[in-house]
Picture 1: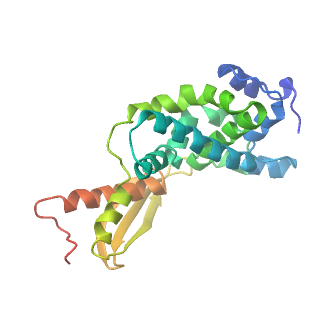
Picture 2: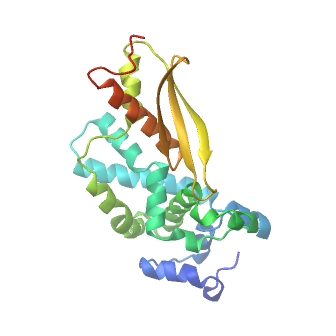
Picture 3: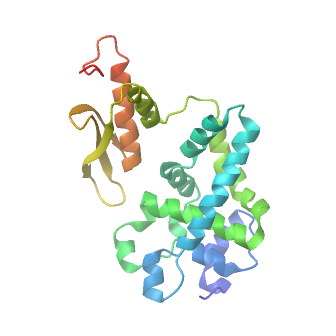
Length: 240
């Protein structure tokens, strides 16, 4: 894989923007290499770096939450899952404009790959993985301190919005089961809207919700269900 500055001027701009200093510039190139481009050019994709970045991010966010929240292990685990979900990673990547730095294959380029939440979320993790392997954990904080931690701080003491877990805990006491189904999706590939339905005991429709990702739609379906169950005279009941 080529790694000369003149071959990847945009990536040099990214490196400079966040005051990074890669010893092995090819790792930065690989972190922005989507599998579609790797297949076309016979190079390495960012998938293995994504694996490393996922672990690095979990550790860093876990440490941040441990130092800033007086929660037990269960609470910290839930909070971390909330902060490093795909939707959050997508927003982190968007704030860095990572889409413009991606190396995509022709087909992925035509299908608006630069704007797909999953592609951007993966690239963000891969970037962290590349930085960690090249310079170590402290260098990763150059990104986290600017992009991630300020966003986590905004919602540090707000209520947990893992509505699926809350709904699951509610129905478990009555030995009920829940199932989430994506019943529709609309819009172009880079800007889809999903509709999820949550069903109890495979029979009772509890609620539906919309979101820009499947996970977000499922969370909204769970939230709407919880809101309806909290009403004085809900239209649905666990006693049905």
